[in-house]
Length: 239
Image 1 (cartoon, helix red, strand yellow):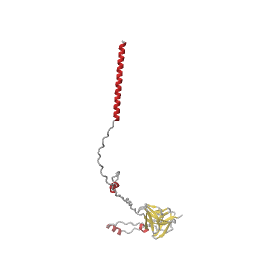
Image 2 (image 1 turned 45 degrees about the vertical axis):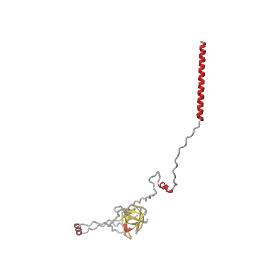
Image 3 (image 1 turned 120 degrees about the vertical axis):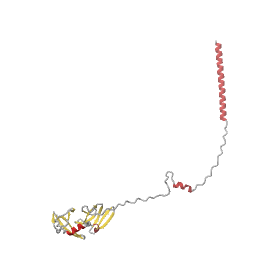
Image 4 (image 1 turned 120 degrees about the horizontal axis):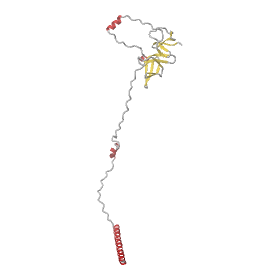
């Protein structure tokens, strides 16, 4: 029994020794092949033949003309500069001038009696006051100066004086004959009393008032002054 075990051990040892020898030989051969591969010099392949480059033309200044006149980021760029004229200022027509009714001087300087339009109320205006869209700059017995949007308008008082004359339509034949046949109606004299207000403490005379200057009524005294445009009548406070 012991002999069989000894023979089996010897056989196993022989196999192990043979396997070790075989592995050693394989390793040596592999190492040899590896060294042969690493030490082998590889001949590089010859480079391919490259065609000769085309001749480069010299740079010309005219070649940059298109680049100078156009921009890659703006297709509408061109060398023609369009200068747009400024828009024409809007012309605003000047409104109708206010009507002038006379000049009053109560000791504080001349004041113009004016109205904005034929149906507007009569008021006194001093230089610097607004008369509708106009500004009164100066006034005297001969001319009147107005300002509108930076423009100075100088007018003779005769040009804008409201004389209160309105052309009536022509009457028909029957109306004309009746008017010719009818006797004129007498005009009743006006009562000696002040009329509408002109300014503070000053009232107008009523049409047809023939009372003399100095007449006192309603705590006011009648004043008649001569001007280049005729006699001016008004009532002022008697106090």
